[in-house]
Every structure is written in C-alpha cells, then in structure tokens.
Length: 318
Image 1: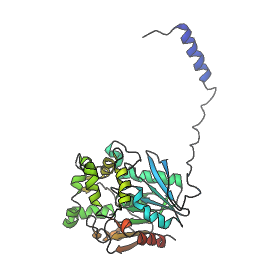
Image 2: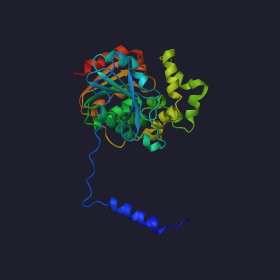
Image 3: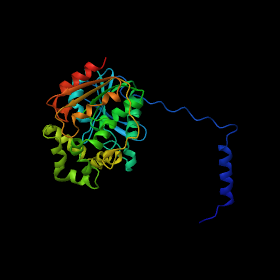
C-alpha cells in the first residue's frame, strides 16, 4: 500500500476543516411526507398501477375508481387480479386499491423466512395506508383475510373489515388442534411447507396451481395468472407465508386478536379447505359481527359470485 504524502495529508486537513460545523449540529431534517399517488382517484374504467414503497418493501399496487377507499388483500396463490371483477363493480363509487402482497407477482420478495411473519405483512398494509390515506375498509380473502383480521385488531387506520373465507387465527388454531375434519381439510399444509414444493407447483405449466382453482378462472385470466406465477421466486414467496406462520401444523398466534370495529364475514359454504365451522365462535373475538353464508359458492367466492360480493361490500359501508 502506498503511504500518504505530506501534500495529501494537508489536503485532507483542509477538507475536514471546511466540513466542521461552527456550532451544534443541525437537528435531523423533517421526514419527507408520503404522497398519495392517487389522491384525485383513479380511472373507473380500468386499473392504474404503481410500485409503492410501504416501508420494508415495495409493492405493485392496482387502483380503480374514486371515493371512499377500500383496500383488497388477496390470498394464495393469487395476486391483485383476484379482485378484478369486484373492482369493476365498485369503482363507480369507491377508490379500490389492490396490492400484490409481499412475495407475489412483481412485488418485492424478501429472502429470509421471518420476513413473511404476520406482523411484517400487517406492517406492509399499514405502510400502504400511510401513503394512500385512511381510514379505509379492508377486504381480505384467504391469507389476505388473515392479514385483515390482524390489521383490524392493530391498525387504527382500518375502520371496517370484510372477511371472505379466511379464518380468524384464534378460532383456526382451536380447530386445527381439536377438530379432525378441519385437520384433514387442511392437511395440504404439509405439502406447502415442505422444501422444494415451489418446484412441483411450477412444473407442467403450473398444473397443480391451475387445478387448485377447479375451473373458476377463464382462459384469459389463466394467461395473466401464469405470468404472475412465473415471476422469479413468486411461488416460493407465496409458500413462505405458510412456512413462516405455522409450526407443527398450528398457526403461530400468541395472543387474542380482538376486533372492535364493524366486521362482515362472508363464507362460501362449499369451501372444502377452510370449513364454514370457522364462523363458529367468532363473536368471542369480534364485538360488532355480521355473518353472511353464501350457498353454492366455494373458496373462490370473488370469482364465482362477484356481484354478490360487491353488493354486500357496498351495503356494509355507510
């Protein structure tokens, strides 16, 4: 290594003197305020898209319509498009915002498993609401419902919940510990948490994922879904939600998620994975609860009866 020359040392001294403050250092500058990219609303005819920094990650987010804000959270193995039909039906009255949650489609996909724990996922929602402004109604399906339940308990910016075929984690934990029927129905968890399952799911043109929808997706929707599943580490990211939040077949929930805001729970009664008995006992955790049984619908309620879903949401929001 070449030694410093006297001339170089003098130069360093001169630069350091110029950079020394004459008094107390300035206080930390005020944080840059977040700016709502859709403050004036969005097109009612079709979604607009942006990447939004929500804190730990950036999420790919769809927005459609103008009015009071509804945030819609998808589950596995979907992305924002799981809500496209419902968004079309609500966008004449509401600003509907649907993110691809972390790990999905083109949103950020952290590498560490603990970065998919439920508290981090709720933090993403909180960060998104900080940008687009609250209060909001949160609609959640499947894993999106799990985030919605926790957000309803923790985030003051959420003033209403609509849950669709998504168990409350306290109720679900009890069923998985004690109810053989729900244990059998959820036995696919063993596959989802196993190492290498993502390779099985992307094989043969995503055959396993396509099969899981049991024909509810159109051919055009399947093209878009396969594009989303084909993003690097996207299927792995979705599976990491299961891997990070379940231990020995039970959810990692260590507290009661008590919800004190108006909550509508809709359930497709033909769901064979998350059984309708998940509605039983909810009143122990939810102080203002409305239950709506949707006969003839399966787990994929927003695809099968989007008009019913949209009407129920609109009737529930004052």
